[in-house]
Amino acid sequence: MQACVVTPSNSTINNESLLLKVVIPITSIVLLAMVMFGILIWRGKHKSKSISQPSFGTKFPKVSFSDLDRATHGFSKCNSIGGRRYSSIYRGKLVEDEIEVAIKVFNLETRGAHKSFIAECNVLRNVWHRNLVPIVTACSSIDSTGNDFKALVYEFMPRGDLHNLLYTTIDYEGSYDLDLLPMSQRLCIVVGVADAMEYLHHNNQGTMVHCDLKPSNILLDDNMTAHIGDFHLVRFKVGSAMPSIGNPSSSSVGLMGTIGYAASEYAGGGHLSTSTDVYSFGVVLLEIFLRTRPTDDIFKDGLSIVKLTEISFPDRVMDIVDPQLTQELELCQETPTALKEKGVRSLLSMLNVGLSCTKPSPNERTNMQEVVATWHQRCISQRKLKKQLCWY
Image 1: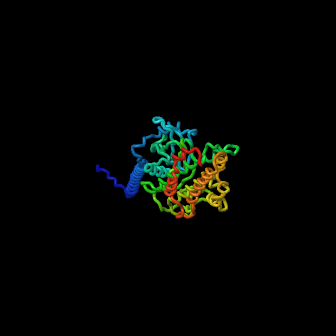
Image 2: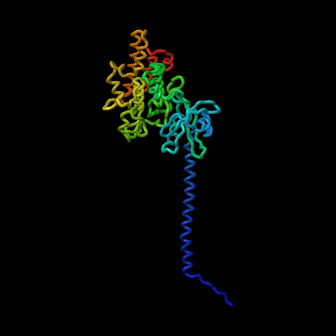
Image 3: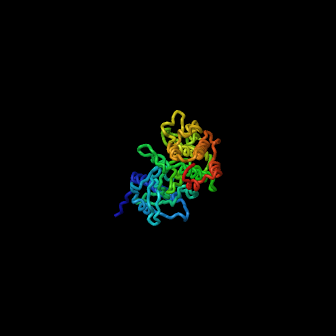
């Protein structure tokens, strides 16, 4: 019997052909997309790894997340000593070295935190000065949940920051502890901050602008030596455009500076220069001796801490300075009049420096080299001030 030959129908052939034309291209596209996606993820991780682990050199000890976790007892709330927009700060003790440290943990879920970490690393590995907060090491690791972990480890400053010291030494009756922040100590702090700013502006690594000098960024060690901290806004290049003020009610001026301490050129989106730091230094200097915040309610309708000092200088200065300083004079009844007058002159000299740093025009302001040079000519140094028991 002749075998029966089955001839496929045209519809079957057409369906198979259509299926091949559709399935093969789609499968190819999906496979290609998966390959490209895998490559992008690999490149992203590789890039992230390469930029997130800045080299601090061999002089800095290596620490892991577990080391810092133990040092802070699991980053407990009782060891929390502050926080900023991009970070939380904890007090801890490194087990191996028994070193008390301040650990700045970056909140990487916050946009800009990773860049802030990189920026501070780039600054800290290039600078060293006795009046900058000493860096112990950096940590770029993985936490216990498998997420990226980045932290900077600084020497702990037991006296806290200058802002708290200025405004928490007044007791409930409104009187002052004269053992805290006497005139000689304030002079020492101001000279220390000036030395650090002069170093940042004129060091061999190139000009650096801090961009956010204020009392809360000035930390004090056991010897009451001033150390400038918080370097995430430091800029290496001078002359770059600055952002304008976005929200007038905010305490921050865009990403640069803090209202009350930022120079007026910030508001107009001017250009970054060392003179903007000089202005902030001048405001801090005036605040130290007046013990008055530049953002206090009394400063309105055109009145500022700078304007108040200007209209009071020199004859009515003692009416606006911190009452603790006048109390120091009153307690020294036996001091000869000539020496008291010398003390007042030294105060006037300091306030005059503050005014020269806060001129409206950046070109009219003095610079930190001139400030430091003037004090050195007068033999005013941190070492000498610490040995003085009285400021006149």
